[in-house]
Image (cartoon, rainbow, N blue to C red; front, top):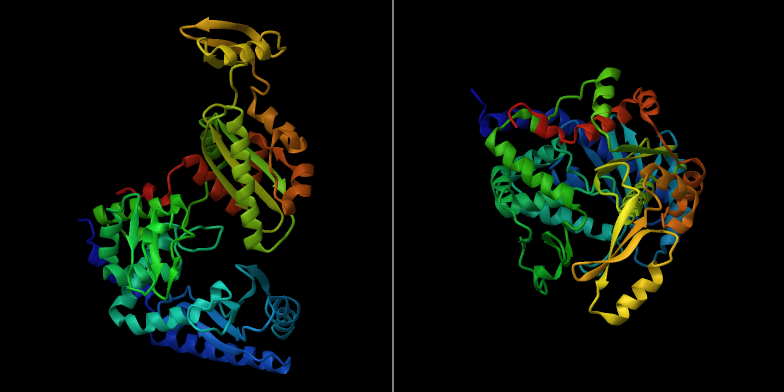
Amino acid sequence: MAPSTNSVLEIVERRAVPGPDDRKRMDSQAANLKKELQSILISNDFDAEVSIQGSVAKDTWLRGEADLDIFAGFEPSMNRTEWVEKVIPALKKGLSRFKIVERYAEHPYLEFRSERVRVNVVPYFVVKKGEWKSATDRTPFHTEYMNSHLTPKTRAEVRFLKRFMKGIDVYGAEIRVGGFSGMLAETLVLNYGSFTETLEEASCWNGKVRILVEKLEGAGSADRFDSSLVVIDPIDPERNLAAAVRSEKLWSFVAASRQLLQGPSLEYFYPRTPRTHSKSEFQRKLKDSEGFLAIVFPHPKVVVDILWGQLLSLEKSLVGLLQRFDFRIARSHTWSDDRKLGVVFLELETPDLPRTRVHLGPPVARREESQTFLERHRNSKSTLRGPYVQSERWIVEKRREYPSSSELLRKAFKDSSLGLSVPKQLHNNFTSGAHIVDRDGIEKMISNRSFAEALWDFLDGRPRWLRLKHA
């Protein structure tokens, strides 16, 4: 007998909702780190308000998966460069026992792990509501708003939604993911009332969803935002909480919501660890993927958020280049180890095109355009046949400059005149080291588990949640 949604949620609740011991450990860890951070700032003559924010402060964190957000609030008069040049170095020195990673949103912040908890140290300006100097200035107001509106029941519902979003890989507003933020998930539950109602409503979303959970003065019309999903920030009428959600993540959420409601399963929330696939399994997949290309390139180690912005820009530019030369792209995806190696996967309808392409000219009735067309193509070296009249217009058959996608790409790696735009921080490494990897080369790379999982997902094509037996 298939499980019901309620029976599945009962299991999720036991796994996702922190128990008394979990809360005690988190409260102790948060208090100790907050105190330590405050001490570091004071000892370096920085006047800052240190507070716990995010899901821990709102009690919407997931058991065993919490991010502990510690915010340091500075006066609005503080220059941002002072945070970069003075505050960050002081914090890195004071927290040197941890392995610090510098991250970047609107401005730099620090990330490290402490007792299996990911800790974020984030700067903001202590301002009045609406007088924002940075995006993080809203966070304390978000915390206050949610704590005054969430109940024990809705907090559990938020946890269900967050865990579901994580399970289907649409959770996280960072550029690498392009998904739903925690604040957005919380706001959706407040608006619809529960996890199940949120999924039922999302299952019916069309191309223009507008949500206003709080009637704010000066909110105006949500239609002024040019997005498929607009969720007005309950403390800032000028902000769309869903602005960072990429189209594929939005519609994956809609599709997965429908699938869960049709056939509930714990695996939507807690997917199984992908099994390791054999070399022969990859060989069979690659054999069936005639239009598959993998572009491998080295990249420098930069702040991961900046890195992913540039990687996604590069992927878009590669797709655009191929499309300009008449190649049709079915799918593309980027993988990186976040340290030194990047790969762009491409699936083309066909890797090679006919050497001849038919070029449509103007109708013969348009005298001046016809004359220009004839002058351009009649004696051109790239003209193979024509020009000739077919029906009412001129036609010419041209020699295709790059019938091979691999040939085009290899040329574009070195020749900027073809229009491949490589972001600044990737440029030198990419232009000197990018290469197209053949099947033998790909097979050598599958020893890297993260790469192998990304490659298998791409070759399979289906999101993992759609591979469930009942999906």
